Image (cartoon, rainbow, N blue to C red; front, side):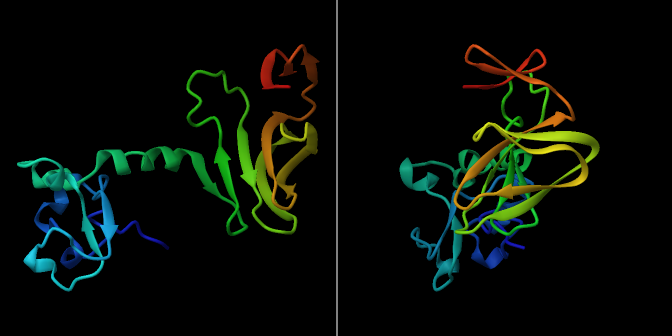
Length: 188
């Protein structure tokens, strides 16, 4: 397991610029970053590498040390938690496209998969219900009427954008839209 070493609760105190304030962030706000060495001359960090640190106090005279903790750098981690799902293939993620699409109906789950490999790979989508998997990139079905562990074949160096539909859902083209029933799932 990889740790984000710029979070105060994920790195030993001897590598932190503000170990005495590490509980201030409750483990959800990290330092601005992790550097090879301390560039602010803290005697306690002489010869220590790496160092969890931030730039805040260097920007403006009198800036509080707490500004080394960075909301803008680490608050996004919760969003990633909602979007990113692992698959059984190292290096291939299932990205939940509906997680941050706040204004859409999102009647059906949509996942983006990208295969970075030179050869095709297969990942699994699990469902207790009978489903169709339709790729919005190729405009082709990847699976029809399947349930349980459904295989999704990913072509080499390509992405698929999979909408998960109840089995037998009729798709129709209507102008520039592709609809599942009355719900727009894509634009041509």
